[in-house]
Amino acid sequence: MCHRELRLWKARQCGHLTCTADTNVDCGQSDCYNSAAHPPDCPPASCRCRRYFTQPERIVTHEADAKCPRCQ
Ligand SMILES: [Zn+2]
Ligand SMILES: [Zn+2]
Ligand SMILES: [Zn+2]
Image (tube, rainbow, N blue to C red; front, side, top):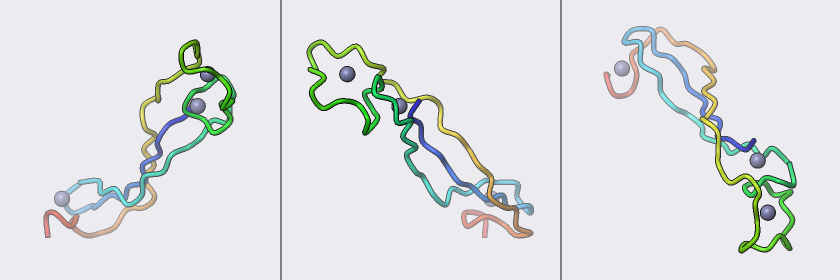
């Protein structure tokens, strides 16, 4: 399933997560409307392919012994 991937780092001094990157992950399945693998000739009027995105995946890349930009 296509979804977004959020990369975050954690500020230890305030405990907040800060997003640094937001990428789309393509599932590569032809029955998924959101994927680049979805056939362009699948007619929109009759397309029954999946159209929804799942919840974004949150990946904490690192922790820093600091405050987040909002709390500085
Ligand atoms: Zn997909
Ligand atoms: Zn379709
Ligand atoms: Zn903070």
